[in-house]
Image 1 (cartoon, helix red, strand yellow):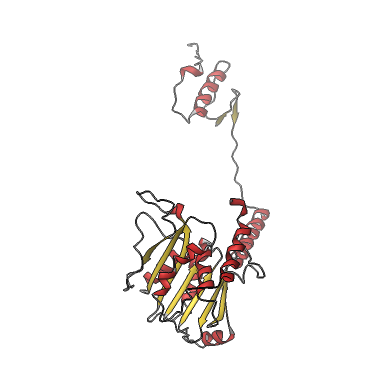
Image 2 (cartoon, helix red, strand yellow; image 1 turned 90 degrees about the horizontal axis):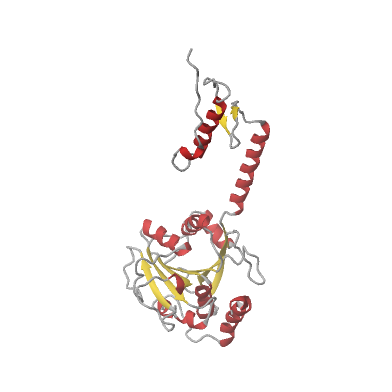
Length: 324
């Protein structure tokens, strides 16, 4: 009977692609084992990095009650978090009764201000007069919710105003952050309360000039400046040039613009690019041409009081000392 000979191959003699080091160790381990006794190939083997050959035992694992309880607990936490992040609309009693009876809000012009500069502009130049009534608010809790002085985070989320002399003109100030998973909810719920016939939507939005992409150099005197983006149903002429590619509109203005495009509503977004953190009087002046064009329906205060401007600028300075 021929004598069985076993050859031990050194690891450096083996050439395997990267990622197959386990196979190399297995081969070397089998060769080491073979020097002492023939290996039964019917046995499933597993190689370790210490040169041993171990048997592998498999077993079927079924979900036990503990895992089921954990899954149910996780599901409950997820549902509670979704309920907490739900967008809620709180209307005045008069508006609530009208909506419950199936009558939507008559609206010819809806002005939405998103961001500190845009919201402060409306407060200083438009809402400072006594021609506006507060008709509701929307609350949207998320991780970045922050309360304004004297108000809870829900109360300061966004507020709806209606013109006393012309009830078809509505204004909404959004001074909080609306998360990505809340944008669709916010847009659907708000516009579901408005009559879409002859509706014109104007969105004022502010963002950092660092987000603006251009091939040309932007000097310090270039900011702040406006760019516009509108739906196909918008038939008027914007007060500034269109937003150039590859720049985009994000957040709530983008959600509103998308909703209006799908439902064929005339809408335009005016995005202000500023190099100042927080509201300032220079950036607020940039929005003047937008609402001056709507002068027939919205009366613009071109010379607001100094006290009104100081109220917003001072508040921002106290919160932005970290960046000075």
